[in-house]
Length: 114
Image (cartoon, rainbow, N blue to C red; front, side, top):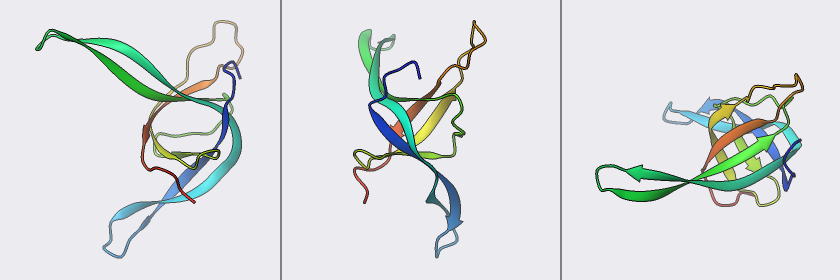
């Protein structure tokens, strides 16, 4: 990994149906104990309508390139128990031919889970 790992995460996958027939995430762990960097990044954006600069914050997770992760999966921070939905998976190009870490954009789903 190129980032310094600050936690371990689990990849949760799978869907089922609830008693009303709606699709729901089952959250079955597919992979556990994956070293990852989990943090927040911010960037400046300008709103032309109000002519006001804004700060946009994203939650990002960096995982090794071999990690099988999809936008339909969820990430669970094993240290805190917080659950995140994956909004985007970025596989940056490698200039040297070596594998490059995957960058995930996340959205917090829950507080802590048991």
